[in-house]
Image 1 (tube, rainbow, N blue to C red):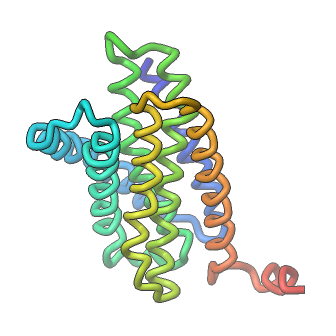
Image 2: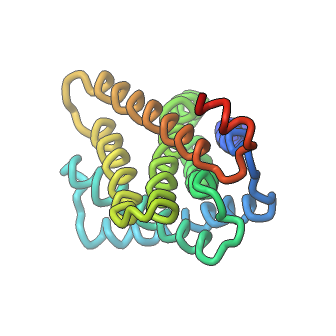
Length: 226
């Protein structure tokens, strides 16, 4: 079961690594990103337990989805990402923020996935497959949104990017949780639409930031302008 929980994480990390095509991050920094995500899991768990004790919202799906889960997870991951990027000389092109955000997010998702998949009551291969298709890609795609808006702040000077780096992944994550928790008609359809939107915007954001890389070969830049 540990292998089943780990496999989609490795696939996600490898995908984002190969997408960083112009100047790849050193493996030491990528390892730090993954470890930051693992450590963030324990911080998220501690904060989440405190929030749940202070604000018992289990019977309110909307509040539970947006406050107990999405708010805690995305705010902690953003703080860890800012800590990793601060004074990091390797953060020298727009796509880098996406890479580090995804490594942190999937580091968190790795530990979370192990907990779910190995749980004696609701674990198992079915849980592993379901999370590999929806939950793990979701965490990676929230991170793409977070990294994109942080890069917009650093490289284009869009001050609102600081807010959107939290708000956009938080809203996506909150609605994802709500659609899983709430008993509403056609929830599966809305969930599929949400994931489709995440994928489309995520791919567009990655392509946009790659085009802005200062390390792109000059010939490639000229050919795309013609």
